[in-house]
Length: 109
Image 1 (cartoon, helix red, strand yellow):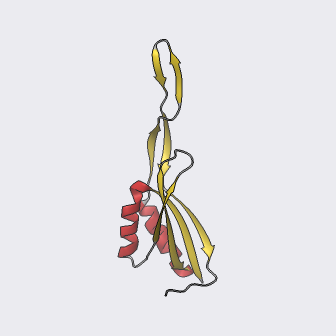
Image 2 (cartoon, helix red, strand yellow):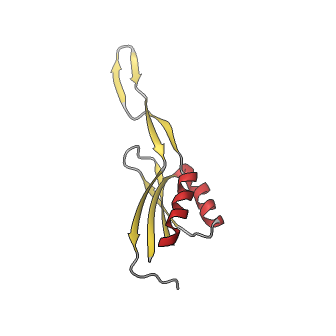
Image 3 (cartoon, one colour):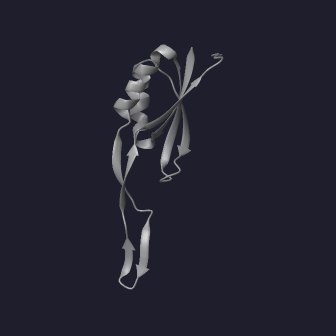
């Protein structure tokens, strides 16, 4: 059975993931998207694979889409007399979010 992997990755990881997919004879459709939490650029990849190939694709995603810490400057504390106080939080970004969907029919025309 064919599966569609809807894979959301951080923009930093897209090039290396697409390269790894192509090197292993997988194809993907790239869609620009924006994350809701940090409002940073993400890319959504649509990857069609046979069910037996899912583990291979997931392995490639794990190797190329690493989690990392990033400073979140979106939370400003106050405008006090001493000046602007800025509070920077470290947040974990990266990795991937993957949805696997059964494909009822697939045609390549």
